Length: 212
Image 1 (cartoon, rainbow, N blue to C red):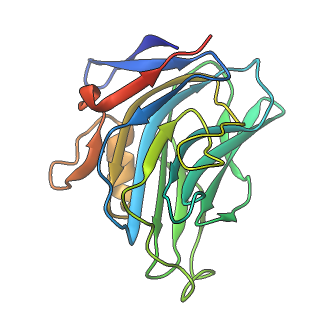
Image 2 (image 1 turned 60 degrees about the vertical axis):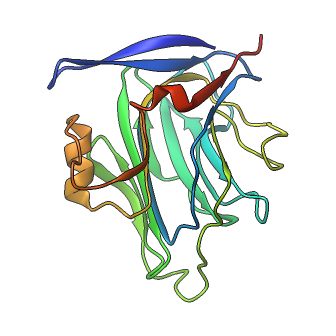
């Protein structure tokens, strides 16, 4: 794994990023996560067009339940179809991400109160659903492990679906962001009134594991 850069033209901000080039490489976010009744994860991603396998962009696992929260994608006809895995329930691969060599902004949100979840791509709604899991959803367990670039078939390990490409500008919130907030993040604006559980600026709290 090596470092890369992303230039946000609207603010002329340069962000460092991670290049995932190995099936064994990954990065771990060293942050403390409480039990969550809602969560949002936003990032910028550049997909490797040479890979067609199912990939996991990020995975959050807890000791009590491994498949808590994941963003996965599979390449289909020069597009990546994204899907959320929430508390073991695998939702459809529907939201589309172009495989065009460009950077794309992706946000995913979920809340237990009404079973709402959504995937936003480049400031637009790619897929969403509400109410299906209402009454069954529980809080996401706290004190888990957040991994970039790999799934977790066991707590913190047993990786089988690696991501290949570049990733930057990751932030995690303990709330379900609204559409207007997602579009603001897409243009590199900061959410000054929302406290994040993790921000990409907290670079020192990322452990990069390099594997050939």
